[in-house]
Length: 225
Image (cartoon, rainbow, N blue to C red; front, side, top):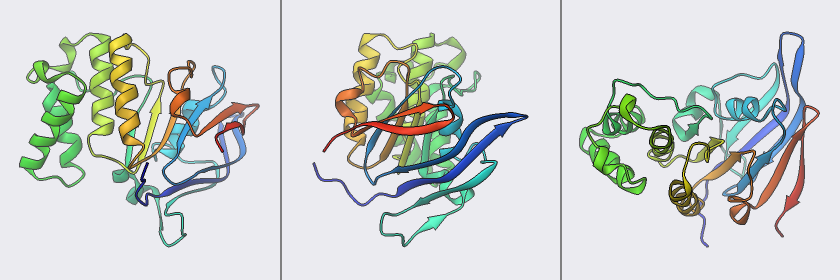
């Protein structure tokens, strides 16, 4: 498989506290260019916090996060990195009053797509997640499984350099999970991927590395040669 040059993601000595609780403590984590990384750990271990930090939606209490290329020629701050991040939280972040295509067109427009490009891109990703028959339906009318598909399509649509997914298989039926796995398989060619999940088995065949959050630290306990 040929992988184009995509940025590397490096969390350098990250500590994150909420009040007196230290969720992450001096975490050093490097996501190699074009890698698929599976993040596991019990409830409350810090998986969601780590993804929110890596996706620019939260700031570390201490330490630095680098979004850049593997040769070190490019690093950027969170504001400039955000357009290159695709993120889907464990609860779908949707606007009930918007239709499915409006969600995707908005996601593409704020990343610089033209009106025509956003319209075409939205149609493509609605087909990918088999939501094209719901083109004009508002998000509030969708089942939990279809809302999850829409949130995932929204993360994939801009073809981000960094794809960060928190419990992406939640609320999906077997067919929805198949769509997700195949879409992730294709995305590996162009993105550095981090998936946090309580149920790693469906994603394990894709993973280059398995990371575990435990005792506020991250450790690698599985890595392909």
